[in-house]
Length: 336
Image (cartoon, rainbow, N blue to C red):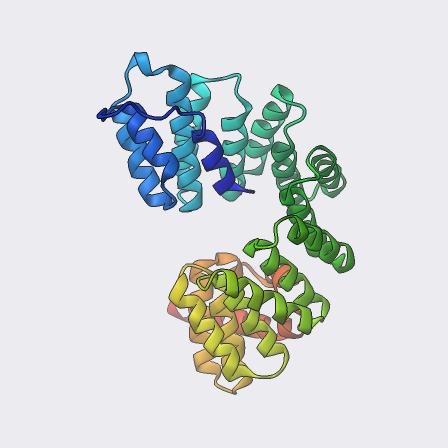
C-alpha cells in the first residue's frame, strides 16, 4: 500500500501560492513539499484552519485526504479514518479517499469495512489499480485467497509499469509459502524500482523463509544501504544470524532495530530466541514478554502463535516460541 505516493499525488493538484499570501493554498503547498509526515499533518491542519468557501470544497477534501494519508504513515489509523470520512462527505464521487480509508480499515483489521470502501472505489473507477491491490490485501486477510489473487492479477494487468502490484502479490505469495513465485514477483518490483527498501526487505524475508540465506542477507544489506534506519532490515539480518547459529550477532541486529522503533514485536521475538539459544531462559522470557505487549497474538494460544510464526519465522523456532508462550501464560495465571 503505497501511502507515501498517495500523499504526494493528492497534493500535486494545488497551484503555486500567490506571493505574500498566508492562506489555505500556501499551507497546502507547504504540506505538499514537506517529506516528514508529522510536519505535513501540521501544515495540513493550518491549511484547513484557513480554508474559506472561495478555496473550493474539493481542495478541502484533498487536504483532508492528504492529512489522512500522513496519519496512516504515523500509524494513527483512527484519526486517518476521520479525515478520510470527512473527505468522502465533501467529495462522494472521488474514489481516492474511499481507497485510502480502505487502507486505514485494513490496518485496523476491520476488513469488512475495508472491503466495502474498496468495492465502492472500484465501482467509481474500474481501472483503479491501487484499489484492486488494497482489496486483494483485505480479501487475503479474510482468507478469501482465490478472490485476492484475482485482484492482484487485475492490478498487474492495469498497472504493470509500477512496482506496487508486484510487491504486494509477491508478499501474498510468500505468505502462501509459494516462495519461488513470490521471489519472482518481488524481483520484478525491484527491477521497476531498484531502490525500494520494502521490496528488498520483503524479498529478503521470503528468501529467509525458503532457506536461501545468501539472498536474504544480501537483500537486507541492500535495504540498509538505502535506508540505515530500516528496522525491518535489521530484524531480517538478526534472523539470518539465528539461522546460522550466531546468537550474539543476532542480538546486535535486533538491538539496532529497537533503536529505530520500539513498537514492533519482531526484534523482541528475535532477542527471545537469541537468549534461548544462549541458554538464558529468564532473559528470553523477559524479551518475549515485551513482544506480547506489542503484539497480543503471542498470548492467544498455540494455534494463533503457529499462524503468526508460519508467516514470520522459520519452522525451527516454533517449538521455542510455544515454550515461551506456555511459560508466559503460567506466569500470568500465577499473578491472578
